Image (cartoon, rainbow, N blue to C red; front, side, top):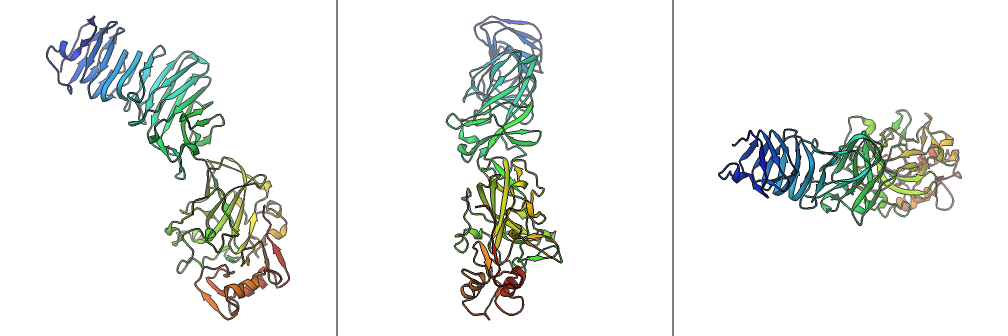
Length: 534
């Protein structure tokens, strides 16, 4: 290893450091350490193919050029006027450094590791593109000093993609600094429901500036998961995910614009979603003594299908999905005994998401638990509706052999990317005014809980024991084949009104009696009509 401890004036057009300072050739993988001061005058260039440690100071308007293969570079936090990257692979930064005049790329990446590269206010970055740019990690980044309103491009990227960010800076107070980095990983606040998204994000922090807008380019498909046409700009600020109202995604140029960024933000893009958290009880399964539902369809052996039953021919004529082309598939373990028995699954339900004007925005099939919570197919609390923008919403809960119940617009809830897991729609405790329709829109248990009306055996829009299309006749004739003594045991059937895993018309615990006595109050001419938004 050679050390220089005096002032060296380089006046040659190009100075080959490895050859002339050392007199003999230094292998490319040797470290060249300079402890003194180097003045690289105008038109001169110091070239090195090995790793470089500049422990002293560098001045002058010439260049220090790194033109080896895999090199390291350290400057002990000092200022280097001009650096040129002409490297076959990459140059790894091992200390903080300041670029005083120009950082020029010919080829190769400058990998910052855990350190910062400060670009002085008077300095420029040139030559950057797909062949050469700056790679950052979770610690290191580019600090750009700015003294006036300006448009500044920082040539960031991952190890395999060029992903620059252009910053539009408003008024500046003194010398402002903006810190940027690109992280080639998903933000920790991402939901795994993001089907279409960036695989990484741009982090921007700034101080002494009135405003900053950013345009992030994602020309390489390597950064994408899914389809860019479904991606919307997302900003994560103080662990809160939000859509940026001033943002846009240009899928032709593959650039994302973010306006009015706060002083610290992660910029990325995803498909959007809203989280619906709701609670409901089914009359057919409800046990007032326990204040929860029976889960007889799940135990002792599970009869509940793993896939969405509302897409099958049995129910699909009356349950039509909107904005939901993918068949829900439950994780088998959600049907196991849970540590809290309130979390044991009772059955599938069908959820309609509507805006404050009752316009249908999307549907989901999900799972209902004994305690009334509605969970997603993987067991998580709440149900995600994908590609839905944040706004105020109401929901309707429907079931294959119960009448649906809908929330009134008066209890609309703001739902979005940051919806919390607390229950937003508790149908079990709603008042009459909070439920869409009249008081006949819901059943009330002996312990005062609101429930979906049971007994809708033919899955239409009403419950009746006599008259046209009545549920009594459908139970006896269609499901039991007209044999009133027939018992269908251990079945998943709309005829199982009391949800005890058996269908029977007569005898103990029969469904016919539950329909007439419990649901219709013993009056065979009673008609209960479903009251939900069209």
